Length: 199
Image (cartoon, rainbow, N blue to C red; front, side, top):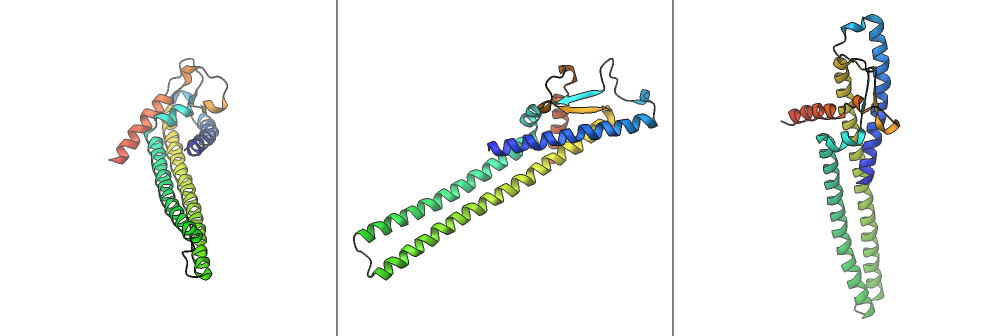
């Protein structure tokens, strides 16, 4: 879960950093071709910049919360499945050990066959656990890309109206005046959009 949350933060920080550059480049091109007086946002003595608190965004954005919950459930289901198979294997191994110590096998060959069967079952369990882990990682990457696309698309649309020169994230900034914080507005709009899409 910690890796998933860290991965979400990293992707979001990268996405927002990328958008800062895009917003700045787009705004420079727009300013050259049109008068800045046509802007729909009045900055009233403030710089035409904004920032988003990544931690707050991820903790309040319903889509990020749903993805995180989905990933946790998937990991817990995988862990439960592996644990159940491991318990069954342990029981069979204990039975084998008991029978072996009591000379309950008809022949050494039969004992060797049972031992090899249990060894193969243990190897299969390891392979199964690795496959589930790989599937979870791929699913996690897919979810991160979906969330990244969701935020990127929204920020581009959002800035068409707001006309910021740059939108920063607090993860790479030492200090920004709280007056430039648009996190709550962005989260509210993202959640409205996500909730509408779910219906």
